[in-house]
Length: 271
Image (tube, rainbow, N blue to C red; front, side, top):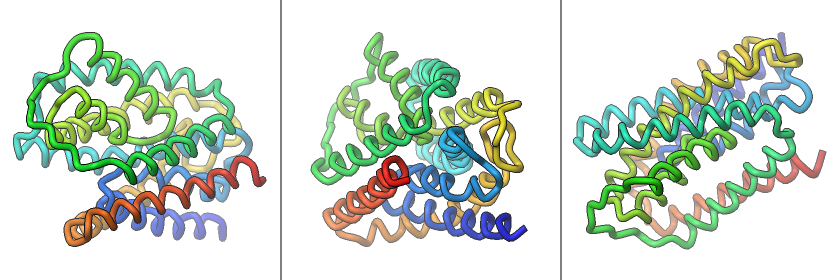
């Protein structure tokens, strides 16, 4: 009983923190939720190599409410090119579904190392990147678009993130405007969260040593506790981000990610 109470408290606090960080830095909460679930899910009985798989799967479903809210807002502001979106998303789904059935064969330590590497590269990228100015309105087409969408789906499913770290830079590299790239990224995160969590729930059915209140690899209790609180605090983080110096914001974001990298390294090599 005590472990469940502790789980509830940590999940609520984690949801508050994840939403605030997501709003402040303009990222998904996966950089907080995945490491947090590695700590909290064992409190509900999760054991062994499948804890990381559960953390990733649960992180994916937590993405859905905030991604839906962001997508609806972007659509109302007419930032979403619907024709391009409908040609982009099917390939994202291909990547998500393919990765979902492959990830169950990947050792937990490998996933943890990949997650730490992703955070480190994201920290370096954010620290050194400039403010992109893309006057063109070029719509990515053909094989390049399809391959990019598949890779976004695969990588995001492996890491338990919404894919914004990859979607936005890819579309900008294709000379797609920044504002429209962010809008496409929001819808992409919604699809990744939905299809990724559904596949994880199916793939995890009947697996041993899963946390209580789970459907397959997806922990419903954690998702229900984190999602509403993260959506609530995201608005305050976003408001603060507009009041801060952009260079200071980049430094803080990079430092935050490096702290999470250190924790993940301890998770992999220190235990």
